[in-house]
Amino acid sequence: MEKRVHFKGWFLPVLLIAPQLFITAVFFFYPAGTAIWWSLFNPDPFGLNTKFVGLANFEFLFSDPYYKESFYTTAIFSVLVTFFSMGLALFLAVLADRLIKGAGIYKTLLIWPYAVAPAIAGILWMFLFDTRTGLISWYLGLMGYDWNHLLNHNEAMGLVVIVSTWSRVSYNFLFFLAGLQAIPKSIIEAAAIDGARFWRRFLTIVFPLLSPITFFLVVMNIVYAFFDTFGVIHTITKGGPGQSTTILVYKVYSDGFVGLDLGSSAAQSVILLVIVGILTILQFKFVEKRVHY
Amino acid sequence: MVEKKGISYWLTHAGLTSGVLILFFPLWLAFVASTVTNEEVIHPPMPLWPGDKLVENYSRALIKGDSGQTSASVARMLLNTSIVAIGIAVGKIAISFTSAFAIVFFRFPAKNIFFWLIFLTLMLPVEVRILPTYEVVASFGLLNTYSGLIFPLIASATATFLFRQFFMTVPDEIIEAARIDGAKPMRFFIDILIPISRTNIAALFIIMFIYGWNQFLWPLLMTTDTSMNTVIMGVEQMIGGQDDVTPWPVVMAASIMAMLPPIIVVVSMQKLFIRGLTDSEK
Image (cartoon, rainbow over all chains, first blue to last red):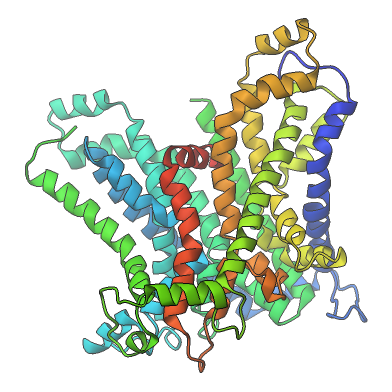
């Protein structure tokens, strides 16, 4: 896509584009290049004894059971978060879409968690599930269930999924509601007149029409679960117990900044870079499809 | 459209209300905890209704932080976070607006290369290149500075992409008319482009403000000096380890204050916020 009419000159546009180019070069391309470079080396944290190791860092990672486990953890975590946050959001959006009056109030009451930082969401919930003083864990204890997400792997995973879902529902709700409201009411009414009940209308008309938004949200939620949930995991479990909630981005952080294993951390960054690249391409394909409707 | 006051009407409201209650549940208990004494919180079950220590807990958090052991005062952290969030929003909008203007309205050598260089950065979060970015910022001596907190986070193309999409919809006739009238590009930029982009700029500002306000990992690594802490990471630092006693009422007061500004922005400017969200992510 190009405009037909342009202003003349080259100096001004280069000047206008320079600030972004400069910042992108210094804080994006240089660090990303460094990550790729480091991933081929085995640097020690003090820079004294760096040696070229080729793809050994990657070979090591793919044979490292901890890294494989982290991949597996990330897959489970992002599938659960995507499924629950989208399911709950779709449910609420369908309900809100049925209302003529009052939908606006519910919207206001349902979107605010978007503004809460994942780390703060983590703090709010870990307070309630605190093994010694938390209200929910206390009531669970009363019912004979001994909650301890600091020891139990499944409980730790369950808790970070709950919190990440809580903090993501608003986002998905807004997109689903916008999608539902964009469906022409005449189509739904025609189906209703033909005698299609609510569920039938939903499954045969509404859900298929929502599929572009659903696909978009699946990609965005995977990206969210991969990266934005760092704050949730850091405040609640710090990746533990064991490695049970160490998702890939958390491993980049803990191997790099805590373990000071720069080569491995850089190689992990490169792998994440590739994953994000694939997701971005998927997303672009989707945008194109929408434009050609 | 299915608006009969039958059973389905009430079920609809019941469903939505339970959704709202689930979302509010942790917020309410955090608020309650911020108004009582630590004694009441650490001996479960904690109260479910606010106590009378609201002023005490909030002012202690605002002025002293967690009694001054490891954290700055929340007032200081809120100031830092405001500067960083506004810096990120303004910086990102400024550089993207001008570069989108150059890309759309000019034809110049190597334009496509510039274009793709910028667009390669789409969607790549700072978490992925965190270690090398840290090195860059450290080598510039920007650790514990506002610049160090702001600049790495504005190096992405989402806003450029959005402005480009919007500029493409500006009719060619307007540019032609401006050129016939002898308007220089910067005249056009100031008198026409900025005014017609006002709503987009405002919507994007809200999204970027929230993004900047809620940053966690980057400030966590960057600010070793507590006086430079931002509020999101600062609150996390107030929580004691396994063996320490966490001053929960103060932590919860600080958490409430940390989330209130972005919540107010989202709720009070809902229309712009939703527009910004749907524009910037599509």
